[in-house]
Length: 541
Figure 1 (cartoon, rainbow, N blue to C red):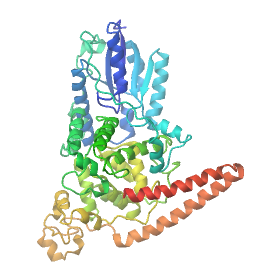
Figure 2: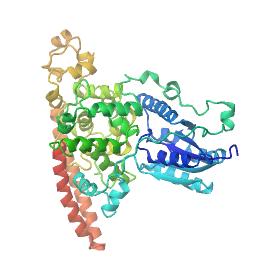
Figure 3: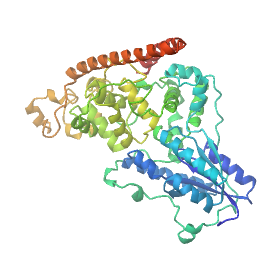
């Protein structure tokens, strides 16, 4: 035992902030009440299990590194610091509990399957070592488990149903920054710190980013400081906040037409509860305002909706075994997937979006609509799971629940079923950028193409292509499919897939009715909510 005082440990995972962090707040409060008994060690674990489980691109590694460095700075302002521990939690906690003489461990709860399994094991280990564990739900506005409980133990499968439930729930109190720790509470150096005082220091960029050549422009720095600055900048124009409607923003503006707070919400650098509270305060002052699902509050509640439905199904990120997802016979087309992934489909609007994603780690939500539809039901007939994996690697705001939920929605596999509504890879971009400035920025090969054919370069003659300095098939690829033809074929494929799924589900329902006559009532409710979902889908688009 290296210290007589007991240690209070807060385990940072997603909630990389000091504001509105109930689990951290608890630790600080307990420590201040009995400074002679306790010391505090806030930790972040670089867990190889997480790293093996998901692909992480260089831009997101940088965002994490910056967020950890900023968090360490914030904690030092509270007379504490961040301790970086490397290894699998289930392996290192037994040693930490003993080495640091831990009495209490707190952390923010999580719904992801890997995290749930890990946390169950950690809680068992803690119990074996006499360590109390307290968890807090603070990554979302509402506790998904509570929402499900209020819906009779089932996740609401439509946005409108979800809104009806949460409207009746009490909003949690938003906490500020905890009061700093008094002097003299610094933990005594353990055996490793005695040898190397930097053993628990934050990792450098070079230590985390293994492929620095993949780093793009640092357009969205990580960390709580930047998150709060960006939030304040987004909310300063209250008229803009009140009038905001997502469908009226541009997917291909040269600078973001939305808040770009999603990466900060994903990492927990910004509290969703704080943002929600600030938005509601503004809307009280602006009674004439947009409403969910298209408003800024509505965008936050989409996040809540997906967290809730994902919490009820551990297979939420895959087609097989997923209670929400239709089974569709997607095709494996590695060449087409590779072309889509790297922005070489021959459709400039699609390619510009995918290149922006790879360079900057973020793309507008409606741009995600366009490329997701193109990959799946619109043009390439490739599984949404393949697209999900690419987004998982490249997006700064990659989130298990939101990524899977949006991919199912956009592939018309779940939640949205108007599969005949297909985004045009040509016309959709023209609506908000008729001159093609966005394409010129991210597909510079086409910079000299005029507005009349920059979205459809195949319409330019070979002579014109030479004049523009970009010959198709040489300097820029030919289009890999003909949208006008394939999207019609794919609508027929979707129709056939829907028919098969209906037949299978009808057969299952009839089989259930033979054994459980009471289920007929719940079937009627499901059909009714399906209609509400179509209405919500129409408003969302």
